[in-house]
Every structure is written in C-alpha cells, then in structure tokens.
Length: 307
Ligand code: GLU
Image (spheres, rainbow, N blue to C red):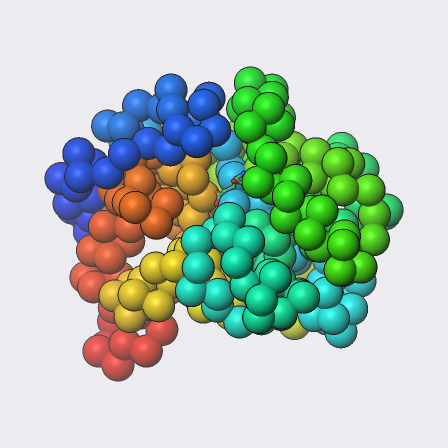
C-alpha cells in the first residue's frame, strides 16, 4: 500500500519537472540534470521504499541549516541560540539582506542564510569541519557523505552576498568571529554531498524524536528536535513556507541543490531529490511528490481524516 502510493506520488511529481529550472547562481549547480527525480521513504520499523534517482549525489545546501541548528541547540542551549537569531518567518528570499538592516539586528530565523551564518559563527569555536561532517553522517545514517569540492569552490568563488551578510552581522556585533572563516565553514556545510536516502535518514531520526531507530542511540534531545521541526514547518521552504504548510503540512527543509527532507511524526522520514526548482528555490518535483503523498496518506499534521 505505502509502496504503491509512493510510486504514484513519484510518477505524479515527474510531470512537473519541466516547469522549473536548476539553480545556476552557484555555477557548478547549473550542471544538474533537471529530469532527475528520486524519492526515498524510511520508516522506524526499518522499511525503505524508493523510486527513481535515489543514488544520485547532490549537495545538501540549505538542508545543512537543520543540522547546524540542531548542533547549536544541543551544545549552546536554547536561550543562547535564540539570543543570536529569532524564530520568525522572514517572508523574504533565503539570501535576502533586507530585514537585517531595517527590521532587526538579529537574523529572522536560522533557516535563512543570515541566520545560518550566525549559527555557524556559534559553532565555529567548538567544532571543526571534520567533527561536523561526522555528525552529519551519523544523523543522515550515511557514512559516505563527503565534501563536494567542485561545488564548494564554485560557491566560495561566487559567494560575496553571503560574505556581505557576514560583514553586516559583524558590524552589528552579532557575529563575533572571523567573517571569512565563518562563511567558509558555512559554504563547506552547504557543499556536503548527500542523496535522497541520506535525507530520508535525517527525516527519520527527527520523526523518531532524535533517536536512531536502528540501534536506539539518541543523537538529539527531544526538546532540540521539537524546536528544529517547528522551524522547518514555519520557515523551511523559503518564502513559500506558508503555502507549503497549508498544502503539505509536514515539517520539511529544502535546498537549492534540489533536495527536500521531510519528517512525518513517528511515521517516516522522506527524502526527495529533483534539481528543477520553482522560482523560490524549492524542488518542483520533490514538492509535488510530497503534496501527493500527504494528500493520499493523510500526513498533514492537522489532517483529521483517519489513516
Ligand atoms: N549555499 C547556498 C547559499 O548560501 C544555500 C542556499 C539554499 O540552499 O537555500 O546561497
């Protein structure tokens, strides 16, 4: 049943691929194949269901913001984290600088670039890139995650807007570390190479309250997971988060590499990969696949239909 619905959802999602466009503001991302679409579902019982391009590697991009936030909450604590960033949807593009210089000194939330750069600034004194990579591997249940050097160099070569955000934060004494080093670590975390399976693994651990269901090991506290999923729900899909919450109703986070990671409370982690993006930066095939799945399986958190 789940398998049939997943297949139908993937087939549904494929119809929309040509309506979008791959990201090319990071030149290396422009090489992605827009007709790729992969869907992977993992359940706490150990079932994996997958269709399409699930082995294809791509960079995590903004989905790394979820892991950075979770790590910061675990190690710095809730109050410190939210003295550096707010928890409000910005309604602006992910790389916007606008509200940072008008509405508030603190970035609006940790899911936009300004917020994530500030979170990386909190992590940088404590964690090396290698330590963070090890944690990403554990929480995505994927030991093969590596740095995609080509994307990293491409992003570093074209990332002046993110450096500008870093300097603006520094000018307000919000960012206290070295701007170039902080933004460089942010670029590396965005350039980790995952696939739809890794994202399903991350979604599953979040759906399972922070515990790896394979071995019972707790990777994140219940409080951290609750906070992270709430911010995914309200801010995870760029400035389409409100519409996505209404139509799909599952905490999700997307990245401009074409991934979407979704977490269905107690039930499943879902990873999709489709680099053809809508105008806000969300995978068009992945988003439609999730909308279909949510409708057919009543996965919306406010769905009152019986399963
Ligand atoms: N590395 C990308 C940037 O900073 C992340 C964008 C995204 O996936 O939203 O522009």
